[in-house]
Image (cartoon, one colour):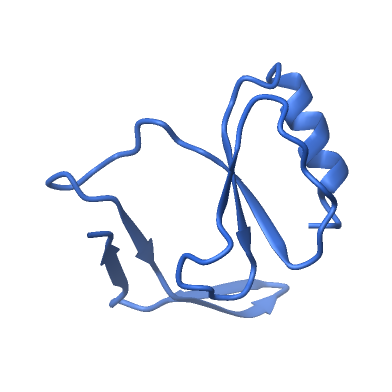
Length: 94
């Protein structure tokens, strides 16, 4: 936000205002300032925010949500050369 505010409004309207979204500050905030947007809640055009579509039933490992970080380097676009590190990072939410 605010660059994609119009796209968010169109997506939300096309889903019939039924889905839930999460509004987070774009800078690391350790959980501060996170808001859940549902129904026809008013969403202002703010700077420094990220809106994500809430996934009600995410894939879990032993009951924990997780994310994967895979590191990739693009060294050339023509011809395309992409290198992926063999090691990555998995984070589990507790």
